[in-house]
Image (cartoon, rainbow, N blue to C red; front, side, top):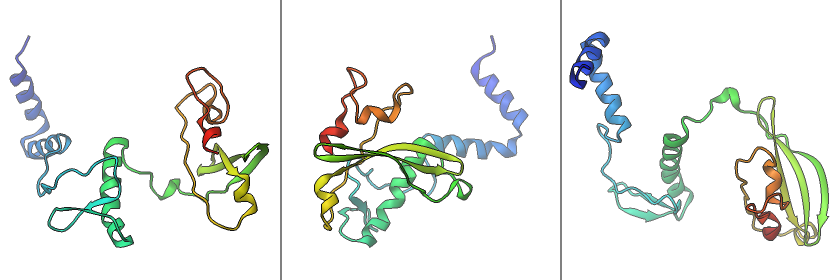
Length: 173
């Protein structure tokens, strides 16, 4: 069995010495080591309302301008985990459609679908407190995500489908 350094040396020779610097740069980047990279302290993942000032200090977001400084850091971190965001070819109008409505005591349960990309629709539940239906004032909202579960999907938020999935949307609605 050949040793690892010989295997690596052979691969570099096949790739070409001119591309070695590119490979090393890619490897350093994958390890989180970059050229010209800031030495700022990493921002907490659980507090999106802080950002780095020009001198690297951490400050609270208090304005739209502050948020515009924080947003790119959030997008960069998300894309490091999920990959790049889709391009313009995947964009489309939201095109919300109401599929059904059912009153559930304190709230209206509205099954909707929306366009997530051209020729693709996503089902979701919109739970609206009855008080919000009668009022013109604004109400708080909650995004209730569901687990990736192929048998019952989005229904687990509003229906007790399995013992280990609490229909927590009903509690929040």
